[in-house]
Amino acid sequence: MLDKIISTHPIFKDHPAYLTLLVLDSLAEHVAIVDTYGEIIATNEAWNKFAIDNAVDSPERLGVGANYLEVCKDSLRTDQSIEDFYMSLKLVLNGELDKFTTEYPCHSETEKRWFLVSVTPFKIKNETIGAIVSHFNITPRKLAELELKRLASTDPLTGIMNRQTGLDYIQQKIQLCSRHGNIFSVCFIDIDNLKNVNDIYGHREGDRLISTVVGIIQKALRVTDVVCRLGGDEFLIIFPNTPVNSIDTIIERIKKGIDRQNRKGTLPCKIEISYGAAECDPKDELAADEIVSLADQKMYQMKMSKKQGKRQSQTENLS
Image (tube, rainbow, N blue to C red; front, side):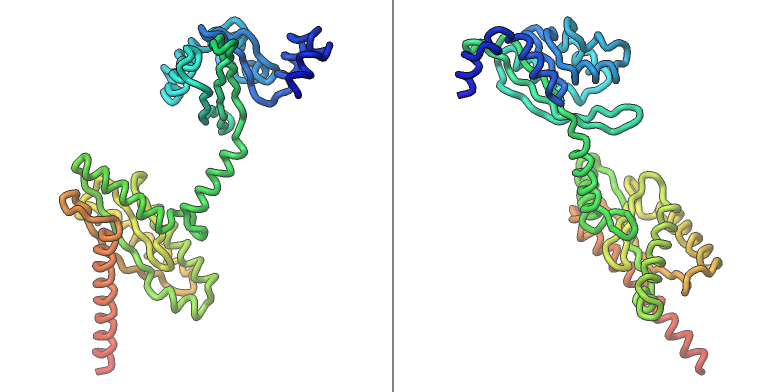
């Protein structure tokens, strides 16, 4: 029905070029029409405005008469991420590929931006004579997706990795170790007597204790180290490319940070932790949860040893 109206109505028959440009200018997408050689033969207002606002050298570089293929090819020198788009654009213009769509980042100096680009072949009697290239700003959607991903991967109280994300990270490190022959270490940390703090002073104070401990750990770590919350009072530090006998210095920094905090006396009770470390060697072929379990067992041994020491001390005092 629409085709019949377009072909018969006088306004379309008398002003086809004007109406085409009017339709293009009404779109929010940045639209350009290119011929089979990649030369830009028409653009809409959104395309022109973006070119003016974001031109590195001159907006004419993306205007009518410029070669869009050459522009993309030049961009490959500094941004290899557009290689797939460049190759796909060439295939569409050569008639070897139908409509192509992909997402890509296009960040400026002041903001993060993402676009959805579509390349649709422009055909007459099944012969490709060019293509319509459109870029649509999807930044709000992309930011929402990234925020959802962040919320799904982080612990809401402390902002560090949650358990599943931490285990996934360890699994990635295992694969890298197997490929390159490297090793890494983990340290399982448990906050002693957190349940007593929650029972006596309330969960708000317990949460404050947890957040304080995480802050102390983060300050002690190197840039490459990662900490995640396994749940409750349990945390895991991952030390990439680090043998287990080399993490003692970092553990000592954590212990000194705890001592400094305890001397301040700003929490209702002193912070005490138990910990255990384990090393991942690719020859052992351990899964992520098995490595965590090894560190957990060593942490438990420390915790039991401390309890036995306290009981022995109490017995000696009574005698």
